[in-house]
Length: 624
Image 1 (cartoon, rainbow, N blue to C red):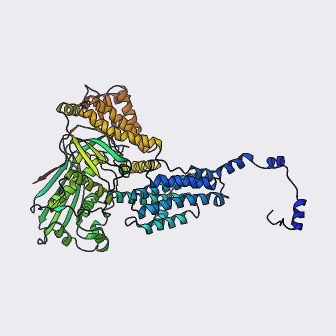
Image 2: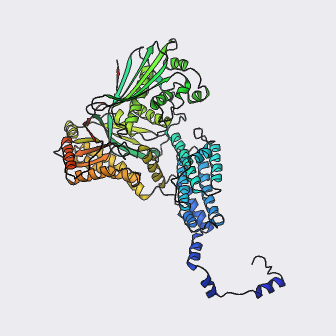
Image 3: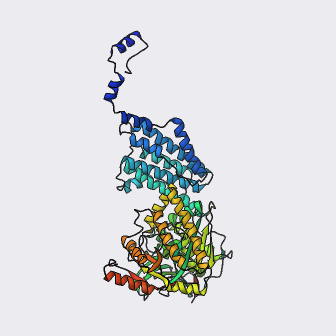
C-alpha cells in the first residue's frame, strides 16, 4: 500500500484496520514454484560483475574459452513480456556495455583480432537473445538492415564507426523486436569481417604493397600464359581460415593434382598495339575435351567499369579485382573519378606511356566444374595476378620468395573481392606436390609459410593408382558453410576446440605418413578429416549430402576404399577417395556402377568421374 503514510497516526490506524493474511493463505494464492524460479533468476550485483569481468578477461587476454551469457538468458527466459523492461533489460544493457568497453579499448590499441572477436561475441549473444524472444529468426528484413547500416563505413573503421554501431544498436533494442535484432547481428558480423581484414594485411586498401619492384614488361604482342594444377586437401582445412589461423594457428596438408592429365587453371595476358582499354574474358571449359561451355566478356573503357570489382557475382569480378590489387587504379579514384577514361591509367600501369593506342587483354580459363571444392577460384586468382604482373613488369618475387608472396597476394585479392576464405587453396595449387602450409598464432598481420615434401617414386606411383576423384553433380556451398564455421569458432566450445586441435594434428600426421611411404594411413587421415569438417560446420549446415553419406558408408563397409572426404568446405563439389590397397580408381567406379544397378546405392544424378594424379610442379609461366 504505497499510498499509506505509516509514520502518521492516521496511516498506522488505517493499516491496522486492513485484512491480514496468514502464511498458509499466501501460499494458497501464489505460484510458489514460479516465485522461486523468478528469485533464483535474478543475479546479485556482485555475481553479475564477476561474470562480466570474466568475459572481459577472456576477450582481452585472447583466451580460448567460451564467453557464456547464460545468466542473462536465464533471466530473460523467466521474465514475462510485462516485466522485461524492469528486470532483464538493465542486465542486457550492462552486458553489452562490457563488450563495448573491450571493443573500444581493442580498437584504440589496434588489437583488431580482439575487436573482431568482440563483434562476433556480441552478435551471438544478441542472436541467442532474439531466439528466446521469438524463434522465427529466418524472416530477417533486408531492407531494415540496409536502413540501419547505411551510414556505417566498415572500410575506414575507427572509433567513430564503433560509436555509430552502438548508437544503431540502442535504436534496435528499443522495441526488442527479434527480427530487427537478427538484422543487426548481420551488421556486427560485417564489422567482425572488417577487423579480420585488418589482421590479414597492414595495407588497409588490400592493394599491392609498394615494396615490390619493377621488372621488364613483355614485348607488345607477346602472350604470358600461366597455368596451375588443382588441389586435394588431405587434412587441416578450416584451420587456414582467418581469424582461426591467427587466433589458434593453422596447419594444412594438401596435394597439387592434375585432373584428366591436365593443368585445369589458366590465365593469359598480353599487351597489344592498335587497341584501346582493357578486354576481360572468363572461360569455363569441359574437363574432358576442353570444349567451351561458357564465357563472359567485359570491356573496360572508363574507371566506372571497374566499380563492381568487389561484387563476386559481377562479370569478370576476379579479373577486375586483380587489376585493382596490382595498382592499375586506386579504389578512391574509381569512386571519385568514375567518368575518367581508363587509357592514361593503363599506359602508366603497363610502363608504356608513349603508346597511345595501347590495349590489354586478360583471359582466365577453368576446366574444373563450378563449385568443385578443389581451390579453383583461389588458384585461378594466383594465375591471373601472376600473368598480369609478368606482362606489365611487376616483380612478385622481388624478395626472393615468390611462393609466399603470391599466396598472400591471393589472400588479399579475395578480401578485395569480399569472398573471404583461407590460404590453403592457393598453397595447394600454386605450389606443387605434397606440402604443409602453416600460420603462427597471434602473429598479425597474418603470415603464412609453405614447405614442400618430395614424394618417393613408389609413393607417388601408388597414390596415382589409388586416388579417386568424382564430381558429385552438386556445387559446394562454401560461403554459407564458412559463416557457420566462424560462428561456431566464436563460441569456443570444447567440441570445436578439440576438433581444431585434431585438424592441425591431422595435417602433420599426413606429412609424416607420406614421408614414411605409408599410403594406407592417408585414407584414415582423410576420413578423420571429413569427420572434423562436419563438426566444424555443424550437423544442420548441409555439409554432408545424404547421397555422399550413403556412398562413403557402402564403399567403406565393402572394403573398396580406405577413406575419403569432400574437397574443400563440403556440401557438394568433388569427392576425393583413396582406394583400398590393391584396388584402383577404375575398381571403385565399377563397384559403384554395379551397386547402383543392384539397388545397393541410389542413382547419382550428375556424377562425373575424373582421373587424378600428383602434380610435382605448381604454377608455371610461359611467354609465347
